[in-house]
Image 1 (cartoon, chains in turn green, cyan):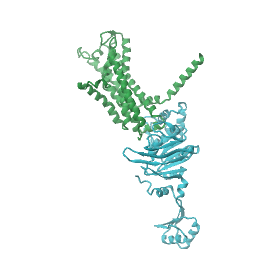
Image 2 (cartoon, chains in turn yellow, red; image 1 turned 30 degrees about the horizontal axis):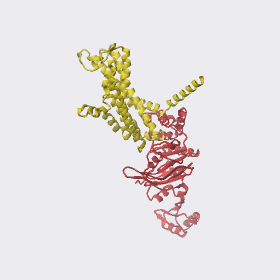
Image 3 (cartoon, rainbow over the protein chains, first blue to last red; image 1 turned 180 degrees about the vertical axis):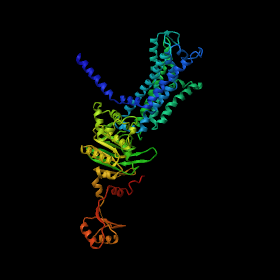
Image 4 (cartoon, each protein chain N blue to C red; image 1 turned 45 degrees about the vertical axis):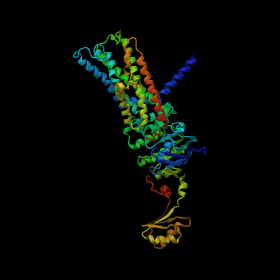
Length: 288
Length: 314
């Protein structure tokens, strides 16, 4: 018994050690130590604070009847989380992700560091996997930053209490917080498809600004395509199509169909664009 | 075809870029293990393209390259774990310190042991003389410091082969001397060094073997001695009386006598004894300003072989 537990412990220590010095950890540290990325996250954190203050200041001037989560915020601070996510998901989160994902490989190429990573040797597949994983972490961290800033602002400025769901049921604060965590995870997952697109685009060019422009622009294009009724046939295939599905978590019982569709879309984009990025990076000539 | 003692061997290695330009044309290179191999050529002669193919960064259009007897497969790790490289100048993360840059490159190397990382980084920094600037951000580094950091990156692990593309670029004369000393000492420890440079005297000082490229083709390769042997030394006289001096040289059997201003020279063949010739010049009333034998430099060899000045680009 003690022997096997000792072996397990040794294995755990080895895993921890090899992880600490690994390329994944280094990539994450590099990502979150970079000023540009910290500014992006800081900007995202300011949005819920600004929104909260604006609602607080204007409370009473508008009568009830405002649509969506916004008018609920003044009754319950927790709704600031939902309101901010619904505001940042279409524009700000994809923009930040577009910058970071578009830059992921092309930035290394432009800097010349790609060739040194490859002759280190990092291995092209391993490098791509590390970059992809780091982008997934960025999706989660950027969404969590928004949620957390919104939660703190909401709790500071507005009353809390029972939360009335879209379906009319009422749940306690604790249960609502759990829902907020789930919603954060879902929103982060909604960004994975775009992360894959951005990663692929960044393998195509040595000019990061071009890749960033494409990776941020593609969300705008999707938005436009979704607004044209004649294109309804292709709309279910857009990664933005079910972005608002996270709101279904605020129903009781939770309505899963759209959420599942959303996750399926994201998974599809990850497979397709991840494979394309792999095909491109493993065969391209690195001349930068 | 490949013997065990070759660090680099290429056969028919060619690269045609998408624009149709043939950058490297049927290159057959043999770099013996333990040599310091100079890779020479004018700008645009295909040196860097060759190096990129050796390192698997770009795929050859034809032919193949071998490192330590194993074929280089572009995009695969292969023998790269035994190779340290500096390719077309250093590249760094400007927002990271010198030390953090090295830590990142070391983390990228899957064979590197994280436990010894700090120690190895320290050693590499000391070897290139950067230990005092390790905490500075790389963007604050001077050109020479960046070059040193690039070299430190190649030295993070003990390597069997170092491929260094113009390693002394941007360094001051003192720095150049340090780096040359470093290369010589690494070679003395048994590391094969493949050194591309446009500084001919640098190659002459450190290299045992040399290959010369011109317009994508290999013009020659061999030991530095062999290359120089192809050229004969010349006997050179500087004098205000060039016509008389030329006559004396011819009388003593000097071949290919040439006079250019105050300089008169001829092939220093073995039957032409310098002491006898000098006495004869003075005896004939030629005012001798200087007298000596000129050994051909690598630059002369280069010009003789390629028929072009060294700085002539394609």
